[in-house]
Length: 197
Image (cartoon, rainbow, N blue to C red; front, side, top):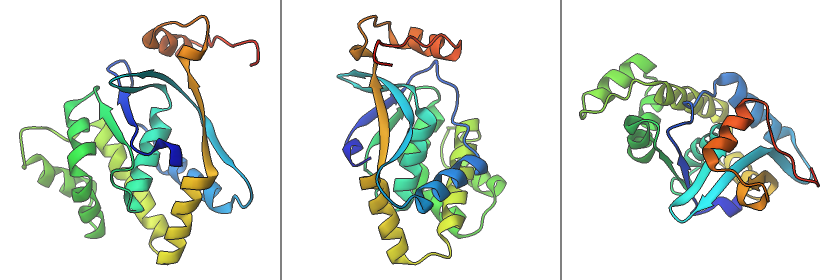
């Protein structure tokens, strides 16, 4: 994860929204916590690296969750994500996470938080992405609530230095398709494998 520093990820229009819930984030937090020795590998992400950023073909859920987790642990600008799926999601992830953190620390529920946030500007933040950002961040906040500052620091170091992402860039495949075709093939169960795979 340390190698993600200052990278810029792009989530294109063809992607579905962010959908992680309590079950997935708690499983990840507990897996990382109980993993003691060596590398902990997340499932693969599939990318298409370009000048304007690293397009996430598969792995948006995991990368977004890492973004939220690192933000909570004090690494607000570790890497960036550009959501091209919804303007409100992009605005939220780039500019409004601090407000979510405050709302959760003040025990505001989703409805209160979103009604107050929607009054700030013309964007409607009441969408599937922002709802799940909030839900996952709330679980992260609660999971760490009874843990010490040194535990948090150690956990952050563990994420940065022991958690690995299996990285697959489509340009490494000699039968390279464009990113959207790869996405469609993945979601149709037609995953092209290389000889080594």
